[in-house]
Length: 336
Ligand SMILES: Nc1ncnc2c1ncn2[C@@H]1O[C@H](COP(=O)(O)OP(=O)(O)OP(=O)(O)O)[C@@H](O)[C@H]1O
Ligand SMILES: [Mg+2]
Image (cartoon, rainbow, N blue to C red):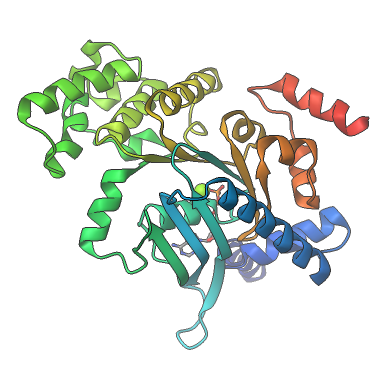
């Protein structure tokens, strides 16, 4: 490789890690012809705030499980100098309330800040500014006790079940583990719970003796979901829970999550870059772009009457593998 080529490659690598927001902006400018002007951004903000206020009114008297109040998260990347670090504004001012029993879908393209938001919600990431309330209590500074409480009430299901499970522990022990760590129940109660859990996610009792490597991807994700449910959480945060799975089992896992949330009255935050999947599962949808919420509303509002240009762009993107007929319907709506 010549020096010239190498520096070009380095430059492009650097820009994908540290300048991805700029690149996104550029991409959108190309897609839209021009970037959003200030007036558009103000309109977006006003609409999102109105939607948030409407849901606040609807749930008057209730306390949200999670309340993110104007959260910003900025990362320093290693590419800048010590005095002038490059900054990535992953989340740029997001306000969101998760109500008991509600499913919020967060949708947006890669790098728009979905996982960062999820990590703030479950206490894995501290916000750079803004406040995090957990059932009304300010947990922005996340003491050890806060984190334990959050861990009991909120569970996370990750994209890749392999990372969530310990390769050397049997399924039985994986399901037992959170209850032991949080000192929940007597040994007999824990054992009974393990057997309940495996049934809840539709796996046979024999799966309890298996190691994760002996299971298929879909079965592993079922185990990860069972583990997430072991402490009877109030809410589950599912960050792209089906993206790493074979297409044929995606719908099964989605249906399992839908059934469980109904059966157990769980609140859920469902994160995906596939707007059709999010629509299928969510009561309320938040569309993120470049670290900001650009649209918020009920699934029907966002789909039937998208206000934001970026949402329209997402809706016009590739038809869903799960629900090709839905997107056809959308196209007819758009044509009409
Ligand atoms: N620990 C970190 N250090 C530096 N930058 C980070 C870190 N975590 C995330 N980022 C950057 O923050 C931005 C948002 O990342 P995030 O993972 O939240 O996106 P996402 O919407 O979940 O994307 P994807 O759909 O690909 O999972 C990206 O530009 C990413 O490169
Ligand atoms: Mg992510």
